[in-house]
Length: 421
Image (tube, rainbow, N blue to C red; front, side, top):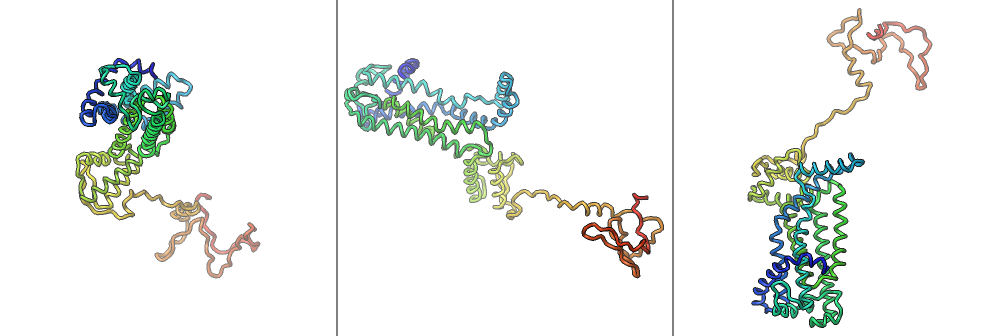
């Protein structure tokens, strides 16, 4: 770790200068040699860095969403060119270029923080060794070595020996208890942040390999930080715990105010938006009007959450407009709140379809015209009723027997079908 930190020694002076400036402010309130003054200086350093990284965080959110949307297309490209890796790579790059997506954007905040993290580690390691570093002179070095956070020195580590901890005026038990609690909190906050992203801010209707990777990272990252944490000084643990808490709070705000379409968080947000609109019968902010306008503009491309939102507005007697406002209209009943589906006619049996198509068969030559009260002419598929005084023709039995042998049938013969002439 010391070797890696030495590569970032070029920003050690700026980091130490920021810490000293914050220490001069907090030292005037809590005392220059207290753990509160030095601890809050590190916390303030984290806050300052994260404020500067907000544009990168916004870019990370957009990149993550674009990657989720592109997963089905990426999978199709991989299957199509699975035997041609070069063509597969070219198509992937083409897809990224067309959609303006950068796969590395999701890692930018972590990469941007790394130099400051290792620079702070180098500063605290120098303090533990009793060496001046950056703008921290001997008097500030002595003050930092006396600072304790809940009984643990700022530069002490979980793996330090009892003799080294004794030189910092502390006990090994207190150092290990404080560092263990901080490591657990650091890992738990990392796990909760990733879990919140996977359970609330992901479109669960799309199952992609990207989701499986994120699920694995949700369990792998906390374990990695827990193993690495035993080698971090208390001051670095304060830094990392603070940045995890900041990330968790920042992500909660983004999920609540700008959730991923189709996710559970979007459903919860639209329910809150629906409650506010129905209470006041209007959309009260420009940002909410933009959201309603975007949902209206989607038309049939709305997801389930957005269709549910529009239907709930209609039930309440409110009609959303293209500009994001709502007007009062007739409330739709429950049966009409959903889009009416086209009813397909029930399929008829084959015999009925044939009978219906042959009811207009032409009359045979010599047939008597029927009276106005007579029924429609019989077709070849309809049985002739016996006339008065004529015997009934023999019927077939259930086992397919032939007609009774009573000679040729008397009376008027049934006209032949036109196709049999």
